[in-house]
Image (tube, rainbow, N blue to C red):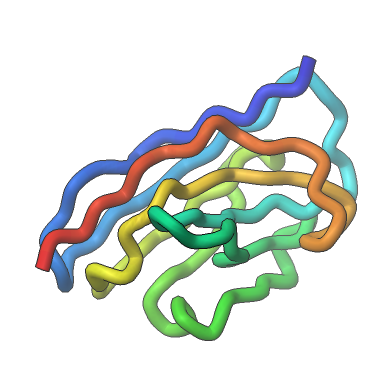
Amino acid sequence: QVHLVESGGGLVQAGGSLRLSCAASGGTFSSYVMGWFRQAPGKEREFVAAISWSGAVTRYADSVKGRFTISRGNAKDTVNLQMNTLKSEDTAVYYCATGASVARITYWGQGTQVTVSS
C-alpha cells in the first residue's frame, strides 16, 4: 500500500514563508517524479512544482516561479516545497503526488492546508 504523507501546512501572513514536506512509502518509486499540486476553494486542482527522481530537473507553474523551490530530501522518497513571499492567492490545499510524469500521476497524498492571510 503506497502512502504519501504531507506535513508543514498552516496559517501565515502574506509575505511570509512555509515549508511543506512529503514522504512516500510502501512502494518502489525509482524513476518517478514527485511534485506538488494545489486546489483552492471553488477551483480545479492545478500543478505547482515537480522534481525528477535524480533531483536534477525541476519544473514550476508560472505563478510560483521565483518564490517556491522544490527539492529532494536526504531520502529519495521525500520531497520538500519551500514557499516564500506567500500571497493570499496561494491559499489552497496542497497535495503531494508521484508518478511516471506530471501528466501521469499515480499516487496522491491526503493534502495539507495552506492559508495566507492578507
